[in-house]
Image (cartoon, rainbow, N blue to C red; front, top):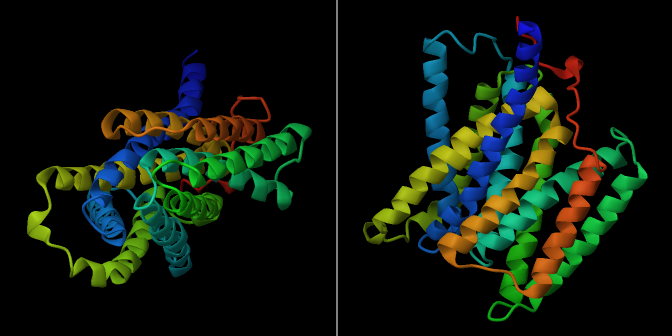
Length: 321
């Protein structure tokens, strides 16, 4: 009985970690929007991931002092993690925060977490790493229709127009980057612990963001930034960045990118609720319809109508010795 309970807990734990990740990410959209309203988007990205990198470096140091992270990583392992950071931290956030400066947070909370698993699934099907069932193809087609409806609604949204559409397209580019980041997770984690991989990826992306945002940072009147903005900076750096990214990598390591992507559907619910409550944002009828069709298609494409968790590929797991 004890072995059965332990086994059940072991299967459940990765999904609890991923659920926590999605709650943090969902809340991060509205919190980031507050910061973008006061600071240049590139500077906000740097603050968020620069702070996240510092927190992860401290965590890595403490882990070593406590006897963790004993596996020695090769320069190739470091390079893979750093390369993942270029895509999943630098490029993703460059597009994301740029989009956030043009479009409401509620748009990003629907596009990014829903399109990311759709794009991940599409790539797995195209490369024949997953089976192209009727349900999956139908789901991808439905999701594409929903996305078109959503973007059409963005273009015609009152008081926003082309700026909102441009922001939503930037959100789509950030979703492409996140899908690539997710797909690279198993390969990155083949020879390096999740904490190390997350730290190196976040650090490399943060350095590039700092270089890119330096000119804009010199023009900021830092003394005029309100205290509540700094509180949001601390929150997004620690919660949706340092903690969430670490838990996400652990989740990918345990259940694989396809199953981890399913959990992304929690994010739009949390993000939409936070945007509505804290920012007073909302969709028009066309956008709401598009978001609903997109979400239905995404769920169908990724799950094939079945929500049973897959068993991870043991060959891809990180050695424990």
